Length: 393
Image 1 (tube, rainbow, N blue to C red):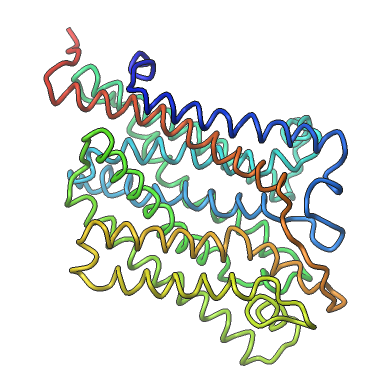
Image 2: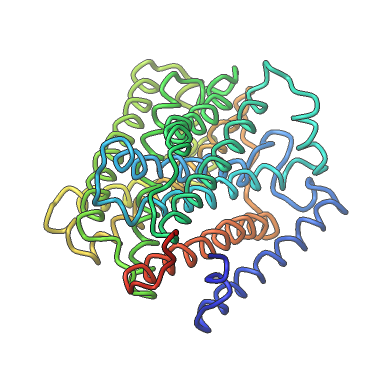
């Protein structure tokens, strides 16, 4: 099947070349970071030690976990409408997990420290379990997706030994985002994160942003390759996004109510800083309200059935969901946890251009993997539809 990845139209190679250039640029800045130090190259400082990259961990882990909402109905409930998109969802999860893992890797300083986590495990450290669940989910999805696709390529049913692994991968999926939430919500002194519903919030955002990004990519693949996952599949996924996104907004509203109705200054301060400004600092007020406006637009487009079934409106709704959650969860969540600091002072943080380009490079790695794996999968399905596939003897 690998030969399918080596064949493609010029735009396929142009896209891969573009992603390769982004990766090289990111590698240059990452190498520069090691020579002159993260303190000088990145926007991080003493009061804010986690920034854009750890925010990407939170967002892309969610995108990967969101694939469960497609895989689970197909394998657990035999929902045949997801037959064409399930393997794409598994390969999508592989790329998203890789972006999440690289987002941590690029800010760990010495790359060898990644291996120290495994060589010298600390059972009371959440990061140890996060590495286990992320790498495990990546491997499980790669095994499941590739084995099922190879069976499709051969024209046979996938082997019976894969069934327990598929079920394990489905059950494993939510754990990657629950453990990532535990990284934040268990930290004392970080009032913005210190909440029992951080993990449910993460899951709700994951089950909306992940499928939303998957729909956008599936519709783009349909336009570029002619491969159609089916209108019923798109309609069902759009309903999943609708319910999950509304629950995500409700959870966020519960947090706002708790912070302001209780009147506890430490809990109110991060919300005040992000949405209204604090002690003369208002760096992210406009961005946060943009996130809320995008959320409102997404809800309107998703709740009204006629709009949700319109492909253009659905793409706009999905993009609004992705952008809204990325701003609130993939960026501002880190800032709110550190700002204001324990002494109620604000030290502004703004990502630098090198920091942003390193993040773009991690995205490019993930989308390169997705592009190649989807190219293979779509080619196998299209060959099967034409009757050009291998039957086992």
